[in-house]
Length: 134
Figure 1 (tube, rainbow, N blue to C red):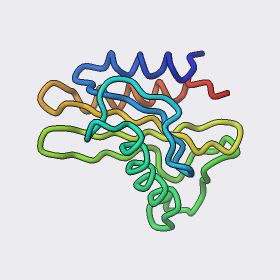
Figure 2: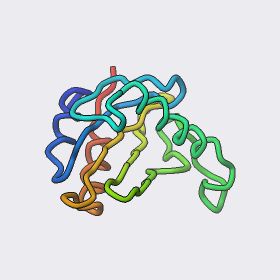
Figure 3: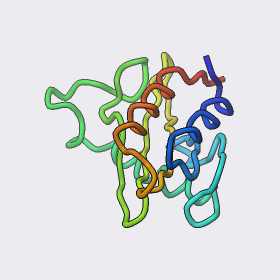
Figure 4: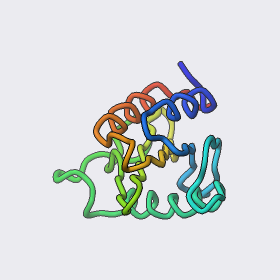
């Protein structure tokens, strides 16, 4: 089972990947980074994407229709992933589910011209399922 560094290197093998981060959405800190970061600063990218992640995870309207699910305790989070599109890129955030109260997500910056959004989403979900934190 891969750790943070291995997962980030795997993320960079996704066609069109420009950069990847593992981020704690509570603190906004990057736990790991590889490749480029939007704006050239991985810490700023981590903090800004953490805001999006936090808003989505704490939203009462974005969760399942039955109100189930929570971020932590090994249960599915209310939001699995976020996709933000810009003129030249896709920004994917995939929440990591663990047996403890996880507040971590994988972030992938994907070039829109060279990347495949569907493939990137599948690969990021697989990486999040295998990621070992610790």
